[in-house]
Image 1 (cartoon, rainbow, N blue to C red):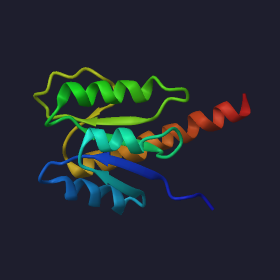
Image 2 (cartoon, rainbow, N blue to C red):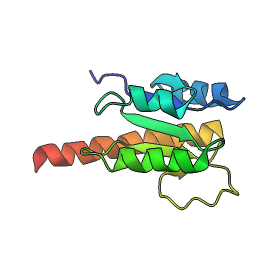
Image 3 (tube, rainbow, N blue to C red):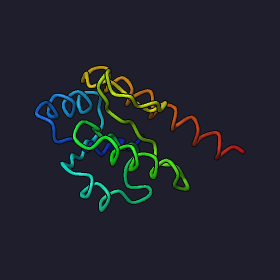
Length: 122
């Protein structure tokens, strides 16, 4: 039996509860954080299967945090929530829509599973 995947969501926007609910409805354990400082202190390697950061309030700090997580060894899978008009060019940017986000979470964690299985075989 596979363990429930853990997702940290850093989001203090008014509609964060909709995004949290959408991800939970896909069967993931969701751990919310309101601030980047809180996420930094909780986000140790291997604790979360995926980290989601809403870039709405602090876009530059959010982007730097996500990049630092991806630069770790092993890299931490991340998604960055950004509005359509944000000028952020990263492959891990996702829209604010709760259902689109939940779909990307599933996809990212499936990809993470496939990558880990490939490393175990190699």
